[in-house]
Structures are given as structure tokens and as C-alpha cells.
Length: 180
Length: 108
Image 1 (spheres, rainbow over the protein chains, first blue to last red):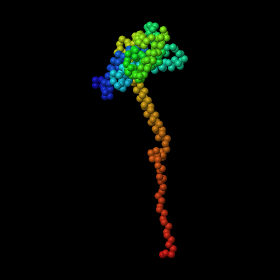
Image 2 (cartoon, chains in turn brown, green):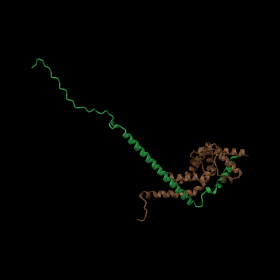
Image 3 (cartoon, rainbow over the protein chains, first blue to last red):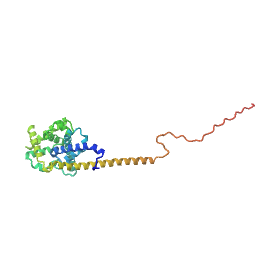
Image 4 (cartoon, each protein chain N blue to C red):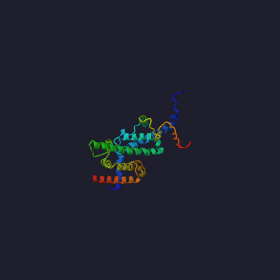
């Protein structure tokens, strides 16, 4: 006996788990930082947790993925949805505590401190937009995604993406003009 | 303010905000160590999730067994569930009544 020998079931499970581990590790190294930034831009106050949860979801549902190529889009979608859920939860908590604040999403104050005045004004106006409009604008203007990709990440139709982007841009333009 | 100017300002602001994400929120120097730490947490959560799921399934089965046994126990052993026809009553076999002898008056 040379030591521990895996059971037959373990031997069958090993290659798939190895493949999953390798793929998720690669995705983790490649996408963790951009996804953390995406969560911050969407207004998450705990971007690290949101991204960590997204990778856990991917790890758990690896076998249900259409293909390994779909993993990046899946991660993006989970981050967008989890950030939206987190922000809504925070809004409910704040409403419950009767502590209304002007800026609904809690942004990283360190990141905000580095911005110029005009950039801060744009980010503040962005934070005041409805969730869907903010998400569409960030995915469109920061990640430079196509409409179909944005639709996939947000779980809505391409037509709805167009609507959110145009309404969001109109609201931002109005906010910028009022600031002048 | 025209649309393209707002586009540019939005791109610029988002880029500045993204690049200003604090170092502690970004990946550390050794991504493999980060991954190992994160994946060990995922495995622990996955084990706990499966354990809780197995416990719940076991609990449901046990409850179903208990309910079934209780239902069987409280039924009347004489009532039948499958055959609901009225049972034929057991009666003692009766002798055929003997016909009355014919009265043939005047006959031999």
C-alpha cells in the first residue's frame, strides 16, 4: 500500500474539479480587479464582497455554464445584479432607520477624493440616476460593451438598453447644464 | 451641452474613478495566494451547503415517514381502503324449506 488511493467516484470527479479549479483560477487572476472596479463604479460600498460572491456563484455553478467562454459574461452579470440588490437593500435599511442621505449609493470616499470637481459632479449625477440607467451607462461607457452584451449582463432586451442609455445620458446632460 | 461632450466627460469621470479604487480593494501582489484563500472559503461554504441540504432532505423523509406511520396507526383495521364494497355478512347456511305436503282429499 503506497498511501491513500482515491475511490472510484473520486477518480471520476477529479478531472472535472481540476478543470474547474484551473479555469476559475485563471478567471480570478484575469477578472477580479476589473470586476472590483465595475462594482465600485456601480456604487457598491463592499465591492470586494460582491466580486467574491460572484466568483463563488461561478465556482458552484461551473457545470451548468454553457461553455467556459461564457464565464466572463456570467461574472459581469452576477456583479451587476448583486450590486443592484445590495444598493436596494441599503436603501431599504436607510429608509427604515429614517436616515435619508442625498447620495444614495455609498461610494468609496478615497476614490472620490482623487477626482477633479467636474469629474466628481459627473459621478454624483450618475449616482442619482435610477439603478438600471446607471448600470447601462457604466457598462456602455466604461466597459465599452455592445448593446447585446449589456442586455445579457443586465438581463433585459437590447431595446430596453437603448432606452436606459438615452434616458440616462439625457438626465446627465441636464444635470451638467444645471450645474453651470 | 451636446451629447458627445457628455459622453467624453462621463468616460473621463468613470476612468478617473476606476483608477482611484484604493489599493486594498484591488488584487494583492500574489494572485495565487488570493485565489487559494478565496477557494478554500468557497469549498468550506459548499460543504456546509451540501450538509445543510442533506440534513433538510433527511428531515423531510423522516417527517413523511412519521406522518405515514401515524396515519396508518390511527385507521380502523376493519375498514378497507382499497376495496370499499360492503362486505357480505357471514350467515349460517339455511336448509331449504320443505314443501308442504299436498292435501289430496279423497284420494288414496
